[in-house]
Length: 219
Image 1 (cartoon, rainbow, N blue to C red):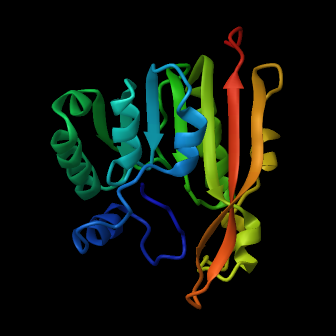
Image 2 (spheres, rainbow, N blue to C red):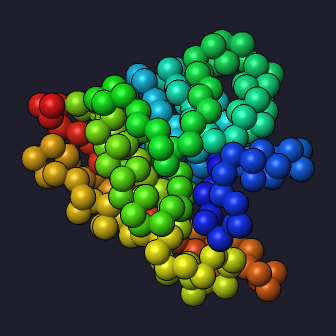
């Protein structure tokens, strides 16, 4: 999972390629826990994983039968993810399409995916609103939109966060952008979890979780 923090001097493919190339593993290798808890009971269909990074979420989805499109800006991350998928199981690997795109500029096909998952995509609000609108438009009728990010309260939590409030969002702020005639909001949550803070002590942070279902009659 590629976590997009905009405090870097060059937020582009070259930066992320270098970051992945300089480490054998940037992320834990485990699927994001909110994805697991919110998608485990969904019937498999077509999934879109935004910011797929080293592939843990995409591999988890494909292992559960989802035909998964995994999108990331970094070819290094995508190559690593594809290798891990093949090592896990050739059948899993065959269910994943790895796609290099800059999600700031890319538009997914409309009304296509039964699940779209965006985990910790922290863009400035002007770009974020456009991205999330594009993702919502790409959900098929009856499909699920799952957006997870660092809650704004984390800026006071004692863990490292870029000192830019504009990068963070509440689930309610995302829900407000979805037309209630087309969407049923299922979850808006500030979900607590414990991590190690910058001082080495356990601290509680909160994930902003939005889960919404596009109404079957939505066009």
